[in-house]
Image 1 (tube, rainbow, N blue to C red):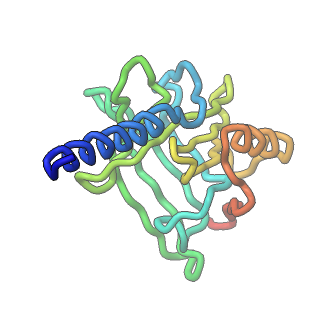
Image 2: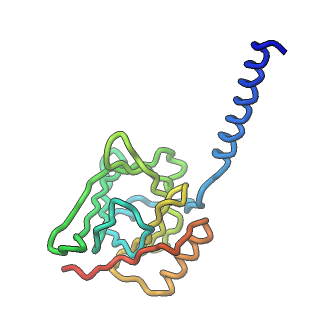
Length: 181
């Protein structure tokens, strides 16, 4: 085999391996999501009950997210929290969310800093829109949100189990304190 055929064969083998990895990655569907979401009902204030650790909420407690539907169908997202070390001080960030595929309204994208965006997948939503389980396709981020600052233990346990059923490790989950004014 001459040198050109060896290079060609290496390219073919490399291409085959790369395509295999891409197909394997694309076949990973991620967590299951709810089939429908009425975004108008979803709007309003949600309190963060629990989350997996992340760098952007690391120093916060009394965290909430307020969603407001825009005229163009996108959603303004306002995240707010109080500093753990000085609860009189607050921190907030505003972003935008949208459904890239209108046929999958539970698979939202959220952007706080252009050009970066993250996934916001609604995995479970109470029929009355009182509590929700949100995650991402990589099982890296997870939130339990409620319309109230507290949640009964049965509901909390049920949502944790749904997260586990979707492949999440919930051992490091953080319960968020809501002892601010």
